[in-house]
Length: 114
Image 1 (cartoon, helix red, strand yellow):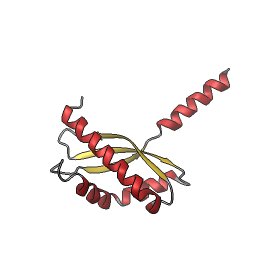
Image 2 (spheres, helix red, strand yellow):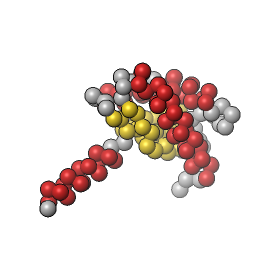
Image 3 (cartoon, helix red, strand yellow):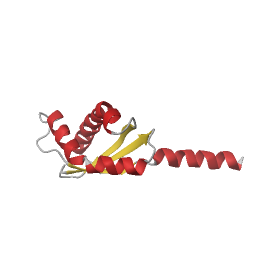
């Protein structure tokens, strides 16, 4: 169960990462639309699991690899944005959020059954 502090830090990171991807996404990722869907943070606030939805991407896995390779720069930029709120910026692991694909698959299966 997440503490109140974990939830607040996760929300802050999600908001600031969303702003970063909104500003930098078009130039860095070839016009792909990157959305931060969920952030889960460890109890000691040193590690965050960031789930991303990638829209208008030719190859989502390649784009996720590109984002993962640039995570050092993303962490540095995020550190500049939240330096007054957080002492330590957590390390990130990026994951592809496939919940929308799962939802569409369930919906398609239900329509086929009718």
